[in-house]
Length: 567
Image (cartoon, rainbow, N blue to C red; front, side):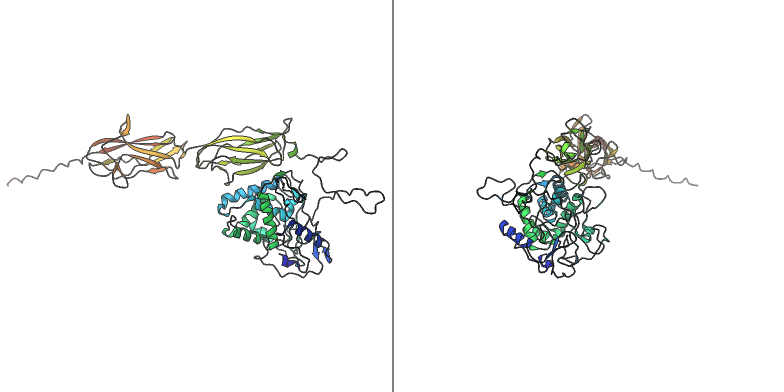
């Protein structure tokens, strides 16, 4: 990317040290010949237009500028250190709650749809930090939509790539040139094919953090890349924005977030101060700057503007209006019925949770995260183990439908409030083995055989449960001694094993997708009579089939005709 900024002064490689990056940023901010475009971003006054970018080299962002701030030297949960403390402020480890939720939900989705990619949510967080400062410090609403659009500069070839308009201004509001859009900074032409609906609202909106995070995940998982290998990880990041400095910056944040992070309330994060286009305050819609402290009497130098503070407001300072999330005191069950399903089936009941204040009043427009916990392969519809739902006007969030896997037993679905530290609410759910309550033969043909022969027809049965097909139900088949004695018979009809030996009990049987079970061919020894075959399934369905072994009926010969009497 750095080659696309003409003769601008450039920062050193961001992978060196924090101090070197800080010095470079300071030098860039004081460089002569820097002008500001109509988005408030700086460009080099004498920059030369870059050649037209192609779909192959422009990346997801069109190689738009990005934030170059590096993480502090200390980890998110540092041990006591000696000496000068590392940077704080815009490099805090906290990620706004809704933004963090979107990253984790996207990574969970990719884990199901593209498990070989091994996409860590921390990579999405690192790119989100570098591209938009985590959606400008988490300025998003309850649905994940950014409050105001986040737009990159016009890609008009002056200090940037040259990409003419591809969307008629539909996404970026510019019908002449393309601009990177949203918290993950997709250019319109890329979003057109890479866009995803991450929050299931029927739209693909680059200004929605859930949609953008899922799209970024799919973009990074192209070409069969395995992001657990360094070479593929590097390739994926460079495909997003083709710059070695960009790669180094993203990797530094990835490593930092892997050491730990935490949620902070939406809108309380800070926007980084340094960008690759060398404008230290290039956010298109920056937050209002706090007023400067009055200068000391007699001084000709104004006091510096104080940085934003996370401390409680002092008396006399207006207190921000609490968000709905701020008012949540606890979660209550909203009438969830017993959660049980057979393996492979869809749960008929859904989880309902209500967010309430300390006075028991319902709280709407709050994000509730549902997480499947435990040794289970059950997922929500769509194959995800995490889902986030916004409470309605009654304060109720209804989780997506659960789809049972093949692992039986009990597991937990935990409901928590995104962006609020309140005790989670656990729901127990159970997956039982597949069962059938009815077995019936698919044919009414009598099953007969001669001694020492084989039965012409194979036994086939169909299993159902509550009238519906009972697929993949375990079954056994035994040639029993009598109707009152279910032990295996020692004579009469039999099956053969793989070695051709006599077998009168079959285990490990299972109905197919249509609930059908066709038994192997039956043979008869020399014993004649009526015999019983009993088939049992999980759930108690039983069917007894009658088998007959009899010698062939003797055919009587017709007497020879008598001679005709003589005439």
